[in-house]
Image 1: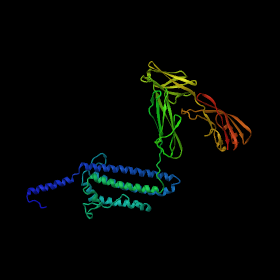
Image 2 (image 1 turned 30 degrees about the horizontal axis):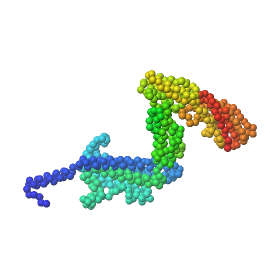
Image 3 (image 1 turned 90 degrees about the vertical axis):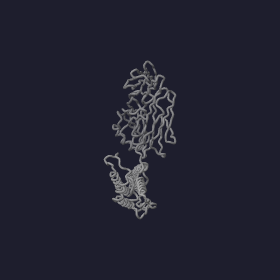
Image 4 (image 1 turned 120 degrees about the horizontal axis):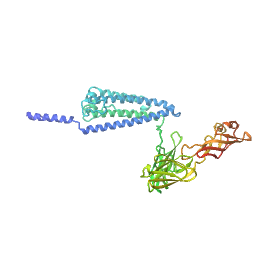
Length: 507
């Protein structure tokens, strides 16, 4: 098209060309934000990929310790470590270029929140294209890919054509390939934010390459082992404040479990089956008094060891006056124990509440907290006077159950003779009792030895729980000997008591 001869028209046309160029150079806020979104996404992806690689490397450490996989792990783990070292060097190199570009654009490295010229198109052109940093980066990426494939020739055959690292000049319909370099194709006249996004993309290629290689090295040893090192019972209740006759719904399970090794759950002493979510649910209709529900979750950890965790859910049953008395441990008061009670006068302040019991003693230890020590089996009534209004609460009173005599981990029966000889004495264990920390001490017993090695039965009375006074007799025992421990006395809550004896057939 010929230029107009009129000077005024020439000037108008020149101004139009300049305005068009200025508009072409202007980068809209929408484009800037789009690049920032992509860059943030790449950064997040890099974090996820890095975490995956870290999990594989932790699994390598476990396999290095396991006898069945140690030999292979010693071969392949060093290769994985080489891959992670090369990746860190390459990743850090690209990060240094990003910092240089941002600093040239006004970023202050000492202030992570400082801003910079995100739409500037000269900085990345100057640094990456004209100063040659782009060509250096291309060479570094090619060397990185070559070094990664050189770690193991066999694995290299799997990845030589499908690793994400690509140093070829991208195809373009508007450029002549012979006149465009790799650096200019990516960074010439590119806004700062776009150049940073492209560098994040190369970092993602590097991290993805590392993850693929490390994962393949690990597969040569075995599958990834992700260990759960913390197990926590999930125990919940629909509510902890109810009225007489309402249902308390208890839900229990395990925070980490395998469908091949499901936990077993007991709620209020009864086993409860699990639903499809691995949770046990039981509804319990409460009575007129407050109480608690014990939830026991039994499971097997990853080492195959049985574990058990118990959680107590305390609940309150309300009355017309709003007053309540709750046994902190159980629904029963036990003779010889300090039974802790929580007492409230409802809307009445603690200073206007008086509490009494008709069986034993009751002492106040803190606002709303009392210790009950019943004196005789049967029932006890706790009376609460809240500012002139009286409410009564009935509890059962029991003796602490008898403990069970045990030697080692056995309550009697067949035992190897050498195992019995290695025991230190007899003890009294309180099994499956709702209170924790309640103990009994054996104060005396009688031992009888008959059978092999004892043509004439032998017996001896012993004070205390130790086998030391009768070790000479025990040393004579052999397979076929029967040892009976009888007249066992144990001291504990409520005083001294005699507990059932036990016997052992030695083998």
